[in-house]
Image (cartoon, one colour):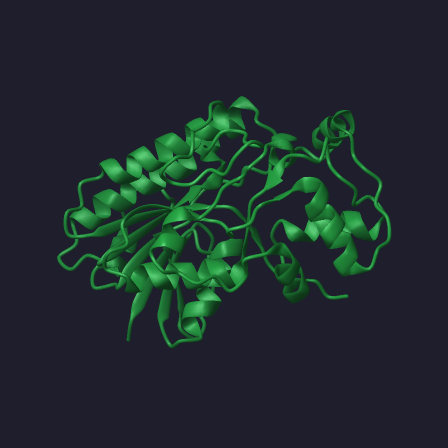
Length: 304
């Protein structure tokens, strides 16, 4: 039986991948900090995300390793939270690399999560892997150091792929849930000036892209995991309202977003930064998207 190891696999994307691969009869071993009860084809191994331990044994003979470990960025960027965001990503990536070095039969592929927010605020043009310009600031610095730790680890027998994942839209959970609530309560207008681009990816494409990477021996390096057609925030919210059959939505000016972010303990950057990220390599190398445009994604994800 094939075995895939997912570090930090209890989160939103981890659950998507677990459901996808177990439906194909693949065993999934999840590295997690919390005690979990094993179930059909899903096994849990305790780890702390930074130290060697008995969990390393599950890597030996596994088909692949997928690292999704990292504290959520949906928080206020206090100094303590910033350090936790750095540490949870970099420590886990480092210790996984060290564990792979000690494997007699290491996984053939190591996929490490990364983020599409590594690119600069972009309203003017698309950002692909070849011509995209990296940004500055805390979030970008996290992304750079995360990827650097991943690629600097010397694992010559393991193919390595970093996936710069855009905001993932799913039927249950993820970023779409709070946006649907805003629309439901009549608050689903544009956010800020509405010109900032929203790069997104459908949950089914996240799983299919991971499967495509695992099966493509030539896939290595960095890939943008985003649908080919990012949309401005104003249009995104308009189309979501239309799909939910809500005729109007009050806009949220930037000052109100700043106040709201303070009250719910998050950062306005998560909404106001323009992410105009496109999947240049995936398109050039033959991946066929299930959902290219936001209209079809909404039709599959929104229950009217």
